[in-house]
Amino acid sequence: MQTISHKTLILLTILLAVFVVPSSISGTAIALPYIARDLGDEASLLQWVVNAFNLFFACFTLIWGSFSDRFGATRALRFGVGLFLLGSLVSSFATSLIMLDIGRAVAGIGGASVFACGCAILVKSFDEKERLKAFAFFGTTAGLGITLGPTLSGLLIDSFKDIAMGDTIISWRAIFALHFIILALVLLLSKVLPQDSHDTQNEESLVKSRFDYSGAILFVLCIFGLMLSITRLSHLDSITLAIFLISLASGIALSLHQRRLHSLGHAPLLDFSLLKNKAFFGFSLVAVISGFSFVILLTYFPTFLQVVFSFSASFSGVFMLSLTTPMLFCPFLVGKLLSKGIDSRLLALIMSLMMSVGIFALLASLLLENESVQLACMILSLFIIGCGMGLHAGGIDNLALSSLKGENVGLGAGLLNTLRLGSESIGVALYASLMVVFIAMAGLTDSHTRALASGNIASLQDISKEILANIYQESFIYTLTICGILCLVLSLFVYNLLRTYELKRQS
Image (cartoon, rainbow, N blue to C red):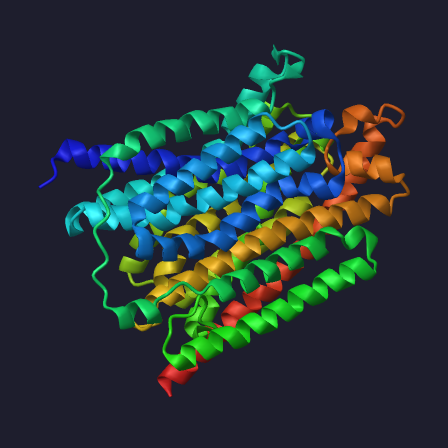
């Protein structure tokens, strides 16, 4: 029997890795203007500093889950953390945007293993009573990573912005260097993780549960093609159309392939038949809304603050606490609300509207003339959106999976996380592309458009900062309005699906 101290070390190892993943997502965006100054402001390549991690994280979460089942959770986690570490190392020493994008993609592939395999290790290492506390720490640590990511990154950038290593200013590289150090410690501590047991499944079970490589390839092609076509919105051409058609064809082929596997009794990578369950689909859409509201603000609002309000990186990070702090307490609030008998459909609608209407409250605050009042209203609007996200993070998985009544819960979890992570990746890509489109409509040259879209206004000395700030703010308002309308439409779908489900259940 394992000692308590041994279990504590297991938990500490997993939590260290868990902290790095969300902080890598939320903390990298604040560095984009500084990356643009050092490596160039090519908009499409700069977008992929964020998109590459999000995309590959989304695509490989399901894949690592399958690897964990077949090859062992500990073995898979070690290999994944090794990839994450390698990606962080490449990112730290990147000399071009392409090299940085590749590093971020590798980090995203490895980072996906932390959530997929880390949960499996906790289930294996702790009994039922201990498991509740372990997963509470797991969720809290993930919330801390999201909350402190922008603040910590901003402090690192400002602390190292004047420190050079040879001919290279450290600046934003310190973020990835910190990730490397923490992940190296995780690998050292991974010796305490439980050894993987041998698979005792019979041959027939192994065949039916074998990993769906064809589905994985089609899934990656579909999401990658969709994101790539979105990033090319600013210059629509035959290549963009071809990429979109490849994505569409891959999506159709994936759907047909998954239906075929389901009919044969094999475990599909994604079981789209679960979307016929209106309650599951309705609750899952709340996760999609978060990708087009909270996540895009978490990713790009720090750049907005630096361009429009001339905030430093560290102060922008502190300002973002108004958005991220609710992640520390709202997940616990959901359990209390549900235990007191609040209608789960009403709660889901509240989550959706807080993230949707919060966007329009933020937009309204930007129209105020008094800067002090404006900043106070911005903080309040971000806090409302953050609360909607925090409530969603604490309860939507439980509500969605409980609606399946024990049937295909594993596949349901996979589909839910795919919808969540896929919408986050697409939302971030859509926001960045729309910003480029609207900035270009202001009549700037291509080079000026790229620089302003990336937040690299230091290189635009031939145009006043006030003009650039106005163009950026107008483009931000147009872009966020589109995202807000999309979130409101999705909220109506949530209401309609859950209402239809309830009427059908009562009849």
